[in-house]
Amino acid sequence: MELMLWLDRGLHIFFGVLWIGLLYYFNFVQVPAMAEAANDSDGPGPAAIGKYVAPRALMWFRHAALWTWLTGFYYMMTNVWT
Image 1 (cartoon, rainbow, N blue to C red):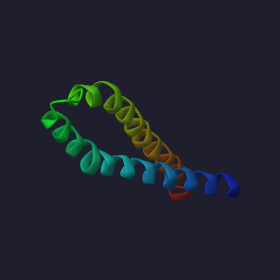
Image 2 (cartoon, rainbow, N blue to C red):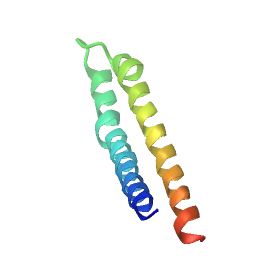
Image 3 (cartoon, helix red, strand yellow):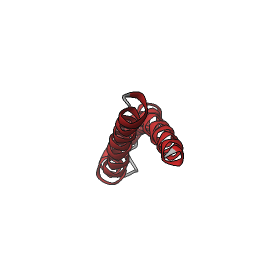
Image 4 (cartoon, rainbow, N blue to C red):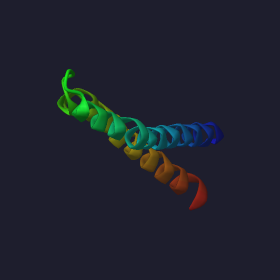
């Protein structure tokens, strides 16, 4: 049982860091890149980022958020509220 709690805590921290890291990616990398792509007359424009990069990053962001909540809830149910 102790091993499961350590594993759950580790996964919770991992997914939380992944979730926050992707949030920083959206704010500090993707949004400025969309602005630069819109101003670039020779490139494919922001549609390339919006069509290929953003959906994949959003999928990872959503799953990281989901697993952060699920592992945190499991940890609470097995450790805090027992």
